Amino acid sequence: MNDMTPTSPKEGANPRAVIGGNAPPDPLDEALAPYGDFITEAEGWLDGTQVTTAAQMKAVDDLAKEIKAAEKAVSTARDAATKPLHAAWQAEIKRWKPTLEDLDRIKKGLAALVSAFKVIRDADLPDVTPHTLKHTAVTWAMHKGVPLADAAGFFGTTVATLESVYLHHHPSFQEATAKALDGWK
Image 1 (cartoon, rainbow, N blue to C red):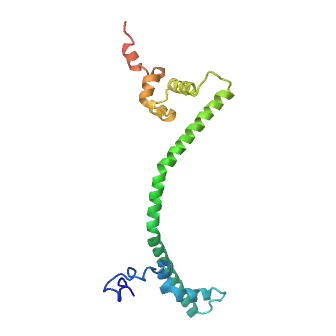
Image 2: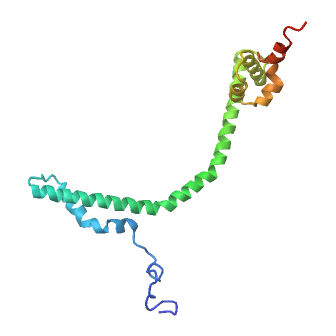
Image 3: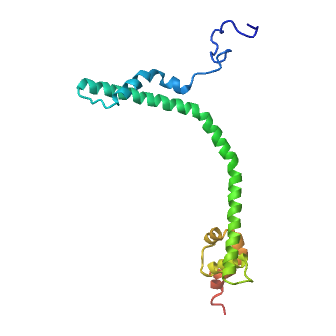
């Protein structure tokens, strides 16, 4: 025996912390320990034996209550054992999320570029660009009187851009001024 080996555990010491106590009991085994005999007896009933008396019915009901308690104990032990794993898993998911979202955004953007090119190519419009298509669609939306906030959301632009570039196509453009000037001689 070397000088590092305690001859007796210290009073109140954690038994897992002493040399030789590095193999803590399995939480599953600990949760099931009080219910082992009940589980064995319940499994015996499941061999096809029929309940034929009131005493047997009470015994099976009592076993069912113990099995329910065992299930709760195992579930509680599982939750305690997996909680740190869940927290670590959530942290890892959170770490990866921005990169995955960026890649998804890039992938969708590339698909949109190809999609717009295919539409233009298939329509045999060599001088048209995706920007031309968007500009035309926004202009038509303004002609139809689509509210600016709705159009901005749909076309992926800002209300400020719509006001500075496209508002003169909107039916409400200078409407108040025109009404104020109406009737001047």
